[in-house]
Image 1: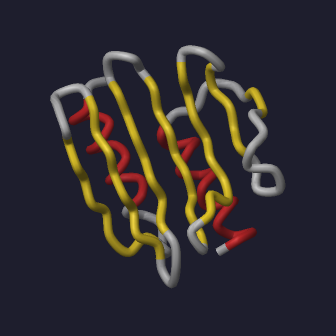
Image 2: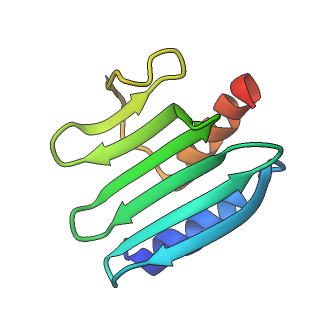
Image 3: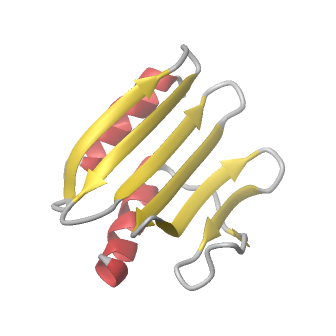
Length: 112
């Protein structure tokens, strides 16, 4: 998936969440994008995507601390940083953007 497809699909799915306030995109190149999603009433979601390396990172930040994360990299593969232990890496099956946004909703219901 290229950066533009990733961004469009992500924005479509995130815009359906009540707690999403604003989506800001910083595209540094044709292959890399950083997105900051402001959440109401507090916190934000940092997202990074690299279409060449196929890496993805989703980090929920509340009170200046990562509370949850879900990533794909070429070293570990798909993994989650769970709410109760953000420093751990729990292997998970491949996730689509739809699945990631659904998981974000579940996490937000617990911590938001």
